Image: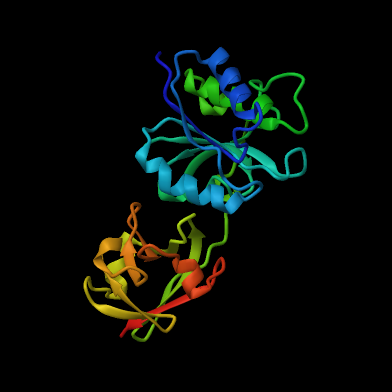
Length: 266
């Protein structure tokens, strides 16, 4: 049976050998599996940022085994899990700290899950501080090589998996109340409104609007407004976002994480 693809996301960065060693462990167990790096630049210990990247990126990767490690409580009381999603039969592997929850929800939710703590596929001895190498990587590789999820650990109720609490956009009269949920290095701001929800809020391309009292236009790309001007647009992941042409929307609007963003017709 040919190996299925593996994707790998972490907050390990590339200055140390952590990513390379995990690759090596997986390659020894599943030498035919292709390992695709999603990102290793997630901010250190930032579970929520990792969960957001995983949710928006995985639809662009083939179904397979998806390893994610952002694990500030490694060696503590947090669980270690693998889960199967309802849609596309994907398996996600990582700490049970909310990291996997948003991606699982995007693919229809978890329909099967196992606790990996006593997995027969873990490396021995198992380090208390490097579960990426000794627990998650070998289990991921065995699953990619054809092992069944049920053999990787003890069954648990998928409904008991830790889920991240995220702010929810809402309508207040003619005003859309959204939230700033991620920022990129250009100062663009992702809001908690996905493509499927846009019709609900009645936004219309080309129309002027007020964003926290600042005039903006709902448009398709940065060049549609003069340099220094604010725009509302759908980003590359079809999520509503804010940007300033050649500038920073985060700075111009003085936004922090989860800050309310009030959008209404101008």
